Length: 149
Image (cartoon, rainbow, N blue to C red; front, side, top):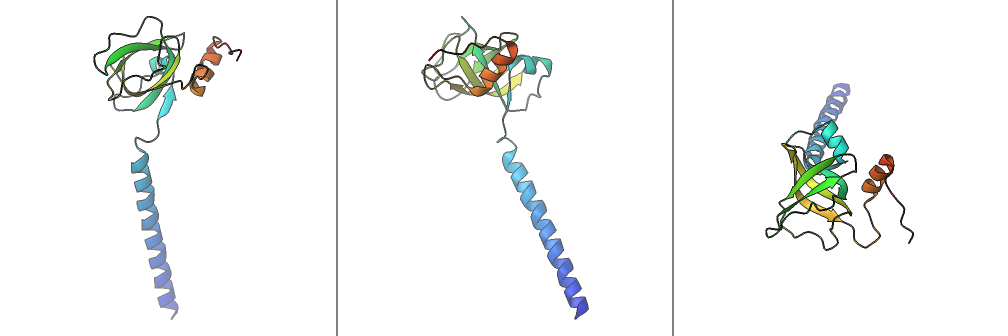
């Protein structure tokens, strides 16, 4: 009877260990593209990510940088007032209505050969909103001004 209990205990432990490993593997596989790190242009230029890494690039849309629109594809420059990165938007949707020069934005995509290829662009949702990450970056640089509204 003792040997049977010991065998069952070992079997239960082995099954639990295998189940734990399988579940951790599945969670890791599911999150491989689900976790998008936020970076500003200075961070990207200081430590360029791999070409396969999908991340969020945030900052201000540089003045006079929005290039010609070809359907839903266009180019612009994201800056944090210290560094700038050219962005080619190659998404499926047109730019958000409130996407404009001098406004905060976050682009999701990959960085290759000095250019960020964005698949998604996030912009403010009203006249006073700016993404928190962009505000934090601009405050660190000492260029953020609080709105009076």
